[in-house]
Length: 288
Image 1 (cartoon, rainbow, N blue to C red):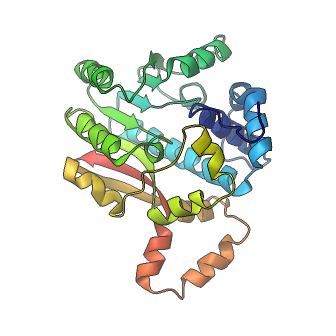
Image 2 (tube, helix red, strand yellow):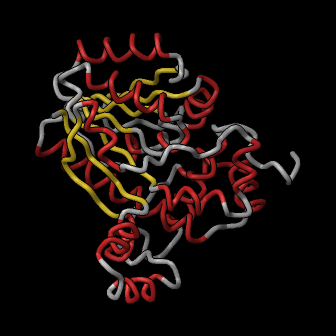
């Protein structure tokens, strides 16, 4: 593999994220323990991280994102009666194996056939905490995706849809299609994802390693100017909104200059403070 192009395809981003989860798990003050992350990341994940640099700020952001979404999933299952979790573009996520989930819960993971086959092989001897189904599917195949959504809808009561790490790689048209497709099923009550702002996207494109992702057909592109209001036109409303910046402070995972930026933020006008606050957010939508 050429060190100039460590990201060969979008599935490699899953190995990158797994490596970051393994890095967090190795900390003495780890926010979570993912004993499967290193197994799934493998040498390929380590090589990718080594080539693009360890990117401490990105590793911290992934740790915070993972922990906050963990919290939200567990709350929705316990308090809102979610009986089915539909994880689209699940990648190398290990929540069905590492979270304390009810055995009655149904968890469905959807991703490219090759990636899920790899994951299936690596975790063949592990037992998930709940009922787990793997669906090998290209989510850009709209007909197959809609058929899956229809099937899940007929089999479930309260569905939580997760698209962690997916939307940023889609076009506006693809996100709009997904939003409408999910909204068509009234029992798909919740939708959980992270959302980048245009400022965050611009920052990503200015980094020295952004070309690696573009070379691997994994260019980030979705960051709507209207923010979460983008989804309102498809009959979704905001149930929860978490600033990744604020959550990093809460969880003691700020970057080195995080304290200084927070201090400076106290002197910014409200408009610019809110832009910074929403630079990356974790959003839970509910059917309107």
